[in-house]
Image (tube, rainbow, N blue to C red; front, side):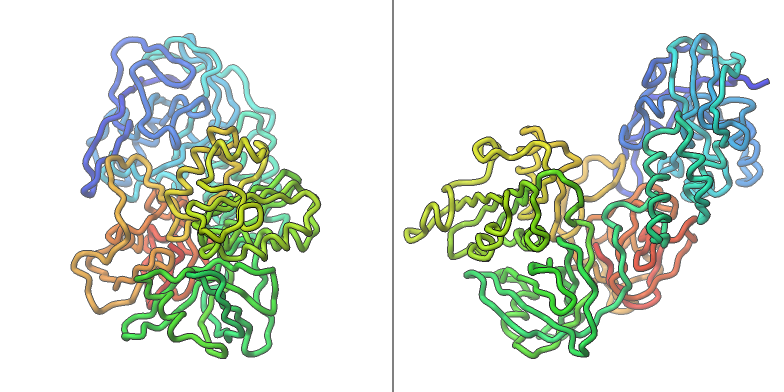
Length: 587
């Protein structure tokens, strides 16, 4: 007979960890007497990170005392107390290899349903004082599980756990956990899991992604875990392309058109993607790596990039001063997940300054397809002198049956013509969205300076565009993901303290930083990235969750610890990898 041994609650607190402050609710203490269970949690309980824990599908976390005994032996420890694993219910019985997703149980006067295994993160490693714990829980098939509350009520230690019903499709917590995190994802078992009505939406979407990857024949890596930023991986490495044209597009923007020198076709890009250039420094030293969006039509014969020449920009200065027609440039295959999606929804291409380059490629793709979608081009520039591709965009818009454009100049020149060069003086804003009739159901693709994108994202959301319909491209990296870490200040990427001049060179292409690997100073490329304030994404830090999966532009790495499931070919997990030679990473 299964029974409830302990009810544990705790409110989030701030703790110090690796020089940072983490807000977490993983510390739980036993309740004396009975406790009220609500739809979202227990009385007196709270979660510090609602993106990863809590909510209706993860209201109550359950862990078994049998797993306590297992970990005491495996870790040679005797200091465990109830709530040690951050669980709300410490139970006897219902091990993960017996309890099934969708099973329903009455405890006290409350009714519960199992919705998913626990998704482990680094905070359980902090609580256990064992950094490997997220990977150990998952790889050993002892994650524990979450309850959804079907009927609120009261519970207390000693209550019997009475089975009240079960799912038609029987899959244990351990089976479902292994189906996502292990390297094996049999199609028939994915289909079985998707038939479980009680399975939480997050796990359902992961299994749908895995199933779709199998149907499309793109089974490299784990599509159920890889973040959008790691989509569309390509083989690492550079190939020399010859510059065939250099065009001055505006006062501070030049375009370079490049072709293969050996006549072999170029990899096909998706509209919105970019390439990485490897450039020598005129003054010597390690090469520069810069990412530039492809700004021309899709082609296997030529690529076009467009570069804003910044006053103190080393890469732009090199391209302007040293590159001539006929010169070779080392170029990666096209990369990036900021791409034009399929579907029939209206499209808004929203940009400022040089941010128009990836959305210009999307406009080319829409024009080539003779799209009948409602397409709206919104662009902000200073004036005509600093407005590249104005005539090109107007020509492309004429090919679209439902295309419209609206251009704002913040400081139009005396010779700039309203109605011809631009449509209004000022800035893009929510009032402009009203004026031009931005479709609220549209997919919005946005690129530009950081402040512009932050303001536009707020304006679009306030205007009524769903956040999941707003797609953004960030030139100098990606949005960081550091769950639970609070009180940090954003700093521009920089070389780490005590930078050495030996060891493999780790170049973060999108952040423009290259630092030498020091095996005694860092356990992973993630730690080096953090020392450089390079924006990174992570959660488990032990090769389980794949939130840190990123593109490997060139080079090679080894893993320690080994991830539970390898990333896609052409990607790497920065949280548990170390370079074995110079590497370039898409961060």
